[in-house]
Image 1 (cartoon, rainbow, N blue to C red):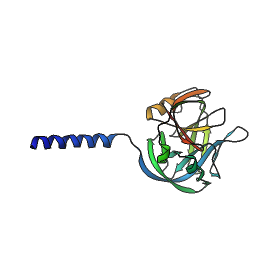
Image 2 (image 1 turned 90 degrees about the vertical axis):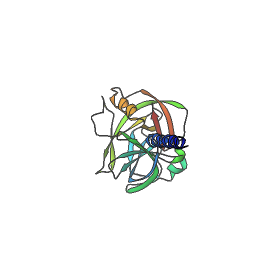
Image 3 (image 1 turned 45 degrees about the vertical axis):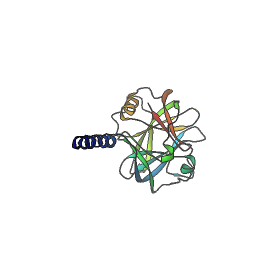
Image 4 (image 1 turned 120 degrees about the vertical axis):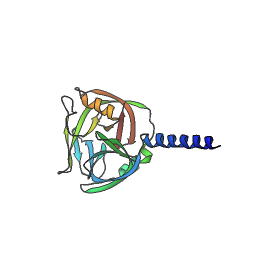
Length: 198
């Protein structure tokens, strides 16, 4: 009997360790400035900290010095207004230094694989001004400070890019940034699209 009890205890301890080391989303609250990245009527990509409704995708420049892609359902995103001031956003936090994401639980769903074609744009945070500088790199951007990436399509849609450290590293090592095809899964909704790249 002691042997069975000891074996079960070891089994549960191993299971608890495996579960605790699995990658998962952890609920969190982030304070910072919300930035809308969208295509204007002239076809130019713009970043705005003051807006009524975002038609592209949302990022948050956290007070902790990290940049977060935001993902949510359409009604949740519509409730987010750009005030130009620090706001708090809560959700499921995941990612790494090359790409954090803060998502509402309703945005975390398994969608069908998708291919998105467009131009990859680096978004370099300027925490002093509270805005993002857009750069279409002509070569690898691995040496630049940690930053976010979006892809803008010819149709005027903007997707924040997210994925594993390896997938983002491969994306950053690409020399060609225009007219690229990215495969992954789309999460979120209009105003907070995120493409999880493979």
